[in-house]
Image (cartoon, rainbow, N blue to C red; front, side):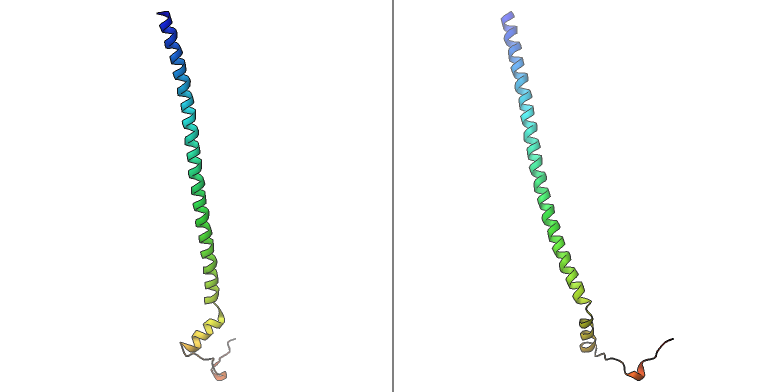
Length: 94
């Protein structure tokens, strides 16, 4: 009976040690998977940020082009048939 208890106690000790090692291994694998997932998320966000920044630069250039006085004058003259006023049409204000 005593030998049986010693064997059972030894098995219980080994099972406990194996369980602790397995828990540590699972924790390590989980943290590694979580870290890899975060790295992929960071890469996606950086890529998205770069695309948005590039689009912002294009929009700034387009805005500057659309606000160009030369462009506005060309549209006023050609599409709207506008002309500069004659000298007698100008009324100075005080």
